[in-house]
Every structure is written in C-alpha cells, then in structure tokens.
Amino acid sequence: QKKSSGEIIWDICVKTGLLRPLIERYDYFDQLSLINVGNFIKKAQQFSSRDKENRGLREFNLYLETLMEIGGISVKYPEDNRKPDTITISTIHGVKGGEFSIVFIPFNRSASFPTNFKKDPVISKPPDEWMQYTSHTNLSPKEHHYEEERRLFYVAVTRAKKHLILLAPKKATSMFIKELDKSLIEEEEMESINTEKSINMSKNSLREVYEQKLQNSLAKDNFDRAENMISALKIISDLEKGINLKTEHFEGWEKELLSDMQTYDVKTDMEDLHLSATAIDTYQSCPLKYRLSFQDKVPESASKPQMAFGSIIHKVLQRFHEPGKNLTEERILRLLDEEWKQDEFDYSAREEKFREQGKSILIEYAKRTIENPPTVLSREHPFEFSVNNNIFIRGKIDRIDETENGPSVIDYKTSKTPSSAKKNIQLAVYCLYLSQAVEEKIKGIPSSSSLYFLRETEQPLSTHSFSGDELNVTKNIILD
Image 1 (cartoon, rainbow, N blue to C red):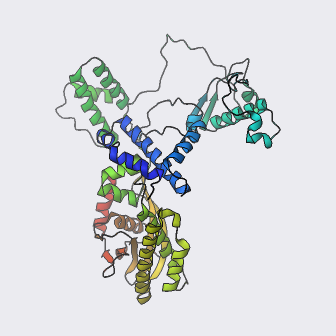
Image 2 (cartoon, one colour; image 1 turned 90 degrees about the horizontal axis):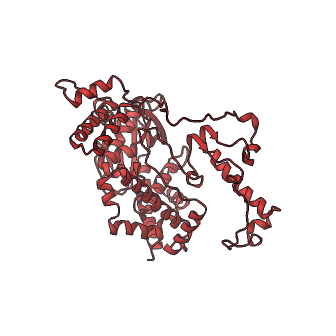
Image 3 (tube, rainbow, N blue to C red; image 1 turned 90 degrees about the vertical axis):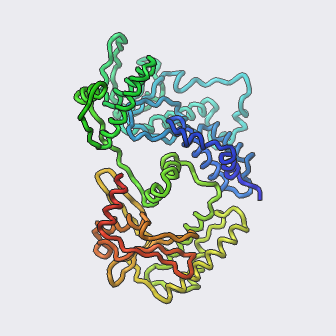
C-alpha cells in the first residue's frame, strides 16, 4: 500500500534515529526540538487524514509551503513550570494563536506600521486583477494593502490578556493608533532612560541568584566553584518542592547558601497541575512515554487504528446502556454501524478486519449482558477532584453499576492482553474520586472495581475491591 505523508515522516524519524539522542540527552534545546518535531509529525498526520487520495509527500510539501507563506507555522516552546521573568521577542506572524499577559507593540509610526504601499518593479506575485479578492470587493490594490496591514495589527493587539502597551511617536503616529477608541487608551509620555544608572528590577529569587553564580563560575573556568553551585541548585530545587533542608555540618558554600536564604526568596508557588487517570497510569508504566506524550507532545505512530477502534467500541457501549432501551444483539450491531468511522483505518482490508472484530466482540458482550442485565447508574461519568491544593485529576468512568453491596465500577478494555485489576491505577483513581464524591447514588468506596476485557470470551472480568489503605497508597503515589 502507498504510504501517507504522516506514515513516511514517522518512518523517517524511526529509521534515522532522529529522536533518540534528543530523548537521552534532553537539555532545553533537545526538548525544544522534540516539541517541534512532534508538532511537525502531528501536522503530517492531520494532513493525511483529511484527503485519502491526495496525502502523499509531494502534496504535504505544497501544503507546508502554503502554511509558511501565510505564517501558519510557528515555533512551539517548552512550558517551564518556573515561568522565569523573560521576554519573548517575535514577529506578529510568529505569535498567531498565542496569548501573553503583557504585550508591547513598538514602531507604530507612519510608513513603519502600516508600511507604505508601493508597486514592486519586479513581479513577485500575480497582478492584483488576477487575484480572487478583486471580484468580491471594490477596494483598490492600495486599499487592500492597508486592510491586510490592519488585520495584522488586529492579530497583534488581541494577543494581550491583561495589558497592551503601544509605543508610538507624537508626530507621524500610525493611522491604526488614531483609529482606536480614545476612551480605551491611557496615554503616557515615556521618560528618557539614563543608561548610566542601574535600573531597579524586582527582587531575584534564590534560584535565579545561584543560576547567575553558576554562569559566572563557568565563565572564569572555576569548575570547583561551579560544582558547588550545582549542588546548591539541587538543594534549592528540593526547597521549591517543599522538602526541608538539613543544616547540620554545613561549611563553605553551604554557609553561603544559608546566608543567601535570609536575603532571597525561595519560590515555592507551583502551577496547578491537571492530570488524567490515563496520564497517571502512563507515568506509572513508563515515565519516558509520559514525558514524550504529555510534556513534549510527540504523537504516537501515524498508524494507530487500535485507538480509533477502542473509541468506537466505547461509544457503542455507552449508547447500548441508555436508560429504557432494549439490550439486544440486533440493536448493538446497529449502533456499531452508526458509530463506525471508515476513514480512521486508512486501508479497506484493515478496516474490514477491525469491523469483523467489533461485531464479534459486541455479539459476545450483548449475549452476556442479556443473560445478566446490570443496573446502570451512570455511563461515561465525568469527574474532577483535587488531591491537594494544586493537583487536579479529571476523567471519565465508563460505567457505574448498582449492586447489592453498593456501587461498582466497570472499565472497558479492547486490548488483547488482560491485566490485574488490583494493580490498575486507573481503577484506583476512579475509586479515590468516588470515595469523596457527594452524589448520593454513587458516593463512597465502590464495592468492586472491574476491568472488562472485551476480547476475552472465557473470563472477561478482572475484579478487585480497593480498601481505604490502598487508596491512600494511590494518593501518595500521585503526590510523589
């Protein structure tokens, strides 16, 4: 089969080993590269899914050229949890889609922004009368130029979330500044800056001070001092995480650190962390996969029909248990037809194979359900709860049933390999949520929690009843 551009680019990354040195070394620039390679792969995969006929490498290259011409590709940067006091300098095209607390827009001067209209003596684009826009507007080429510049100005000013500072001269002020509603503007005259005087900056944090000390040591080739500063930064990192400092037997650079702690602040304020049960489970099974998937945003293989298949089956089972509806084989197969997404499987042979698997799984599921119909309290139950002040967990529980002993949790699995419910952290997270839920019909630790392996015909259920102590262990795992 002819491969799509998404599959080709993924194969290039795998066969060249492009990502491996970035993953192993993983400094700031390696993470920057990973994030942008991941974004590039994602664009290729999205392009491939749009048109099954024209999704080769040549078509993707043309698509990329178009994006580059209109500024549709921008660099993505790592999200730094510490959020240091830094300034992002970028073109307006480069920040499309981004938002910033404070935005400065300089050069708001006539002939600078907007730029003057002039006809290029060299033909660099089709004549205006050939352009499609001319048939939909009465604007002249000059007016169209200024409209394009005005749209760009709009993009710039709408990047600001809190404060927008427009820098403009008193004379030859940009027409865009003059067009703004005066009631929205607070004018201030800039004072001249005496560069000989030091500028009063906000107080540095302890980490920033020691990062500067490390740079100074390296600049002077004082590697012993640099090694001590690295040790100090490790201690500062622990302090930021709330780990107490043991001060006995301190000497030398350690006494220097203790003294600086009296002067500079340790920034312990952490950003709110939002996790899903899936993310926690991924981290427990493979921290590297978690980092690549949830921090670096590197997509999985371009060809992942199993994920699409699992999503379809989950949707069918959610609808199958709608209140008051008949639980029959005929109905569950009709729901499969309604939810089936042919375009998710790339090739017809692959699609047909998964469709047959889906029918087999659902026929067996309907048979078991008809024999022993559950009392379903909730389907695809959304939840969000906090583990402490800044860690929040959200997700959905596939099914919550009512039993003689209390609520019971069911989590559907389309994977081929069964696993133990007792060791499943996703089930434990669901139980942790229900243990503090306030809804009368579902609150409390479930009487049982089960993984339902839909491909298994003999014993599809793996069940465990979590105790309060086990849930406390799960909570501590999340906090760690």
